Image (cartoon, rainbow, N blue to C red; front, side, top):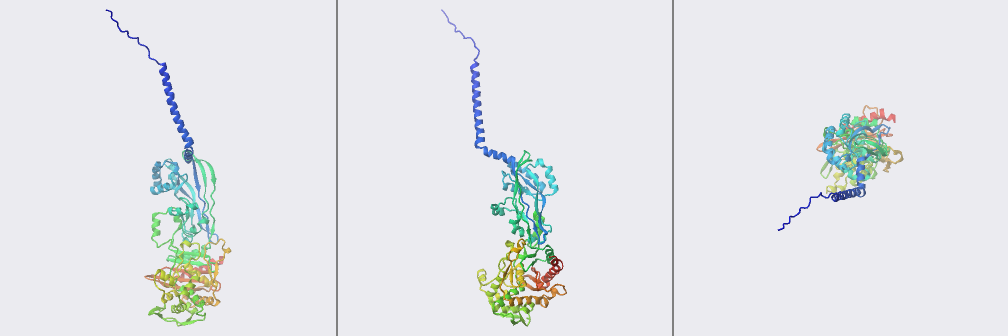
Length: 594
């Protein structure tokens, strides 16, 4: 029997050549796929996303440094500086210098150095935007100690810069604060309105006074630099530059010497004094109390400083432009209306009484006795109320209101401080029916004839009224800007009869020679003065005191009106001495230098 044994094939070495080639091909294929994907990605980044990536790179490398213009300077009529600029240090941050998540730690460090809440700095950054190439100001007028602290912490404060810039400076402190106003950073609400005019976050603009009224002239035009920076933020080179254009300088009608005089005369009394050139309406001086120092707002005002301001009674309100009952100063208008109406001649005489009874209501004279028989000039001299009550009944409320408006009451005067000025109020039958839903009574006309009742006027309007008498019958337009003053007509004739002007002038002179104002000028070396006292009731508060005058009476150069709010006492005792002090100093120290 034959048995077959299976033969085991011999062991052979594995194939390597074919498999090695396969591995190479696989690696090549994988590499091609990877390179293809990378190439596609690079192509996408360069071609599709190229512009955007270049923009992002430029944002990190190229930055814009806006340069604000130097604000125009403000001078008084003699060329003396009232508002200028000085160099200070400010702190800025670059939004694009870091990623958003990196800013919190930097802001915490900066907040400790500047003593400014971190949230406030963050708010400024977020308003500008993290991708903005523009610098954002976070503090102005920082101290040298703060500058050093920031420089020492430079490595921990990437994106933070200290730079010099001009800030507003008022060399005379609070002198003429309500005329000048102040400057400050633009608010969010202001930015919404002013952005179309080129304003941006961090801009400085006028807030009150001529700083606000003449903003377009004082502001100037922004310039700036486009710079290349390195990784640390240091400037490598300047790529382009456009220098800023400074704002225009402004010359005011204010006389700095006279301004100091009127401020001293008013002292700390709540109220106002206005000095006016009666020939062209130029405001020579204007003061209001209480007041403030506009320099406070050129830097960051502290909480303590703000609370101090708030403790006063409306220090930002210019009382020279606010309306109050003008009291007996208004009898100038009543006299003019009576004679110009034709119902009373310049030579009219009327008996005066302790009171006038109208419909069972007694309207008393201020002395509760009357003054006997008086003409217009005597009635002005003694300020007889019952004389003017009778005049008012005779001409009627409509005629009185009409002439009141011709003098400029009940409307803006035209002064540059339009947004701060009250037009006052000239009441009439239509106004009373619309506002109070009542008819006009004879008693309303009587009260208006002596500057009481609903009648309201500003110290500036009262000064314009005195100017009409001083210059022979023209209403002037008060103004603060002296530039190009000679090229304009500041007077408008009221077409008054010569007899009317003569009566008013004589009456105002008699006020000072023997009437209610005689004690004001007793013993002085002043030239002849024409003036009028006024005491306005303001129940339940104390009376207002008024006094207005012009001098010299024969050829007036100046009108001065003083108003003391709720001061108590009469115009002759409270406001009159203020005007006397102003005129004494004016004629001894100011006028000879003109």
